[in-house]
Amino acid sequence: MAKIPINIQSGEIQKNSETIIGIDLGTTNSLVAHIVDGQPVAVKGKDGKSTLVPSIVHFTEDGRILVGEAAREKLISDPQNTIYSVKRLMGKSYGDVNEFEQYFGYKIIDEDTDSLVKIRVGNRFYTPIELSAEILKELKRRIEKELDATVSKAVITVPAYFNDAQRQATRDAGKLAGLDVLRIVNEPTAASLSYGLNKDQSESQTIAVYDLGGGTFDISILQIQDGIFEVLATNGDTFLGGDDLDRAIVDHWTKTTENAKTFSQSLRLLAEEAKKTLSSKDHFSKDLDGQNYSLSRQDFEQLIKPLLDKTLEACKNALQDAKLESAQIDHIVMVGGSTRVPLVKKSVADFFGKAVYDKLNPDEVVALGAGIQADVLAGNQKDILLLDVTPLSLGIETVGGLMDVIISRNSKVPSKAGRQYTTSVDGQANLKVGVYQGERDLVEHNRKLGEFILRGIPPMPAGLPKIEIQFILNADGILLVKAKELRSNVEQEIEIRSQYGLSEEDMGRMLLESIQNAEGDMKIRALLEARNEAQNILLSSEKFLKQNESIISEEEMTQTKALVEALQKSVAGEDKDAINKAMDDLNTYTSPLAHRAMDFNIAEAMKGKKI
Ligand code: AMP
Image (tube, rainbow, N blue to C red; front, side):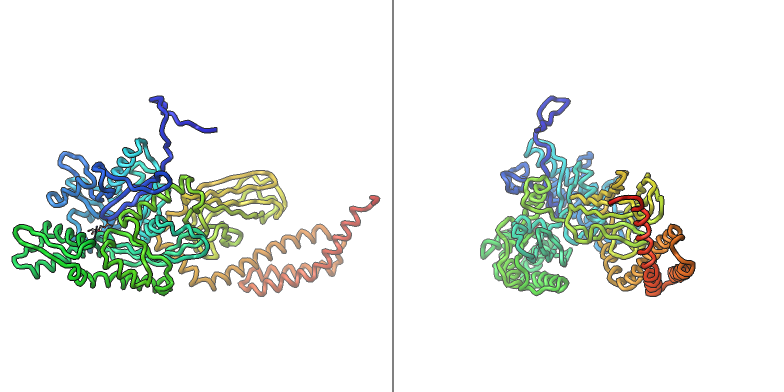
């Protein structure tokens, strides 16, 4: 049955409210994209020309907020009230950014070096989250105008190297802008999606995404396997981009041109114009304040060569970290306006020994990919798999404090897995389910996500209840844990947000610790497992002796008790081999007794019955 959404107040039929939008929230420019007739399209602004919204926020004297082009116009006339590059401050403390504070034309507040930075505008303070939210609101307005409908769900991209705090800050900015952020996607992943590189699902492929924007350079090495993207390595320079190419031209002109202006905003703009012109022409020449400024493509290429060499050095380092040779890269994707420079394309193609992907608008590829991801989440592209994996294993605590993994690290999301457990004590009515994240064998070394108690298990001997624990990890990174006793249908569940609770540093540390401690952990696990097994044997031996007193001789009883005592003693110790040996001894001795008891019980049961 189809549902028709009606606005209760106006009585109007609402347009499809399920459009999910893709947003590239960039350092210099931001864009919003959506799907039109199955294809991703970036939305243009009021002028119908540019899809780029400068990531700039200006506060007017009378308290209005301008975003985008209008804000950029205030950059020179009112720098104190015009905030740019706020992405560089997302999720950062003052301690993180004070070295490059002079780079900003506005005031960053040092309140407490550990807490997140704030920006002072007049007598008010803004967090980078609030400022980013203003940019997102502008993008939301743009697309709502285009669609003539409200939009409430989005996918937002972030650099692959963003840590958890930065990702969380981006999510929060979305929330503040009235957007439900369904997914945070890595920019290089989005760029690869827009070239459809995920569609070839035959085998694993490696991709290098070379992203040279206005002020930053990133190189990411990705691997796609079965539609899942994994970031193998990232490298780059957070202060290297198109602006530096412009500066190289300005420096050249001030040195070589007679009567050249010293650095000025107008000369910088002329340099940018020269750079852009030289992307399609061989020569640039223009007058400014009665002075001619000219540059050939050849000279320009000489000027920028050292900067490009720096980016190639970063590519080399990224390959090294990914343990790959340049020839092993299957595809190279170009992102960012500065990759329009022919020498950039040529240098990168030569470095990897392959043609680069450059057919799409390099300013838009990330947003277009975000739009595709949004469409996948909206359920419109059934042939594309969801792309995230869980970074750490998820599991529960079992007897002895052991971690029992239910969904392992790098599993696809969404994902669902379950396992059966039982009780360890007769008549046990409650079972505590502690949920953990991490790779270590003992839960105490992992991160606790939550716990709950399954209550009201009907009285049963130990080992008889069948308790099924199910983990359901949905596409938003929310984990639902369900516990159900299958004989009585008693059940309980909790919801845990797992994915964004850890910083990437924490994650890296936890993985490293699990490797460094693997041997020690294995020993402890073996000891604890031996102890658990021994406890079960002790329990059943005690029961057996009580129930079968009549058919066991006194000598057998004494001998069994002695072996039980030996096992108890070894369980108190630390030697797993001793425990295993004591268990073996007891088992070997009691197994003929158990057979005898079984025969006897069967005979008793058959008495007086005819077959
Ligand atoms: P982005 O941050 O990706 O928007 O990149 C913007 C950068 O790309 C700025 O430095 C622009 O000057 C540069 N850019 C834009 N168009 C061109 C072009 N045709 N040739 C060279 N650089 C360009």
